[in-house]
Image (tube, rainbow, N blue to C red; front, side, top):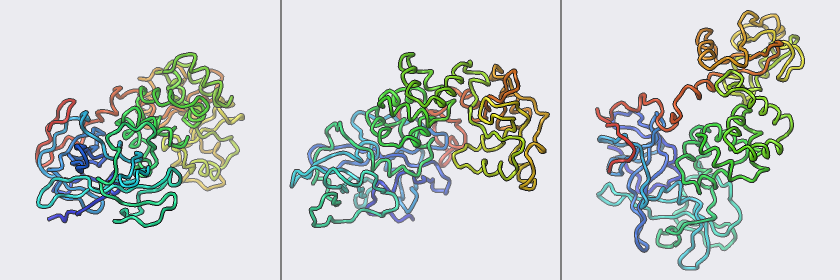
Length: 452
């Protein structure tokens, strides 16, 4: 029988795996749903929001939670696979309580919420929020890392220095029921700092518009760029529209040119031109070039930043470029050999070399001597179905795009093709694969609201 932890802090639960009694992973915990109550009564925890493998978020009542252990949660019974939708009376603990500015009842001092403690009621499966871990003052700790620091101390220290942290009873603070206009995002970001961009994008997508803007404002440019590339277009437009123009231009520069072009294409003409004018000329030129092609063609799908090497480059040079951690796996899978200039649009395109071939040849070998020169390249006006057929026919994860003069314009990667083949709401529904298998034999599928 699982040993239940008498108290746990929510920062230790964010993103942990959720398992059924047979040890099969159901998904990962993304938030907890609480019901705030009148007066200073501790909020009741109604359940957890679990992101199943298909990226759908479902609600699991706390009565189904049989174990909260180190690094995992155990649930039992039949789980309703209907999509979770937050009700007006409900509060998301991670998404809405962390970073909130509240006041200590005794001193009326303003503090910031860094973490929330839960406890299980004796002899029941009900849970409630009983502790709040806070930081005094407004300065310090904006990037405090919650994960890995252990549970907050049971009692606060006695000092009065700025930035002091302490754990207090729920009843010792006030202000959770008020709409907070200046709520930060540091603790929420620290809680999810290990998430991949696609998973963090899922977190942002399910936050309120106000909270989404706060989190986006707190992310650095590169991290926000990575997350924007994984968000639906509506969320992208909303977030970029709430940034100051200078920062929006910086974020667009940090995005892959094809993703930046897709986002700018969704903006009004005046706003699009204003942001392009603020971008570095070379970055804006790449984006403008991509926007000149039809969206569902090789030119509209391609990235302008593949790995390009000159004929006299060696295998060692190529492997050094492939090791770049900022490259996606699809872009790192092969290099393109071209005559100077070696930035797109390049000189004459000569061929490509897959990284597996690079691993089989000595480091001093010239890439021009092992390049595949027989594989045809795609014209920029190649329609999407033909691009898909090309990748499938030649078992490729990327394809060169070459203009009439033979210059390499860019490369189409399989992930960009998939983005355009999947339905618009694929981030919502996923592929409904393994996650639709039964928990204890049955997980009924449903429509839009969680059944409770």
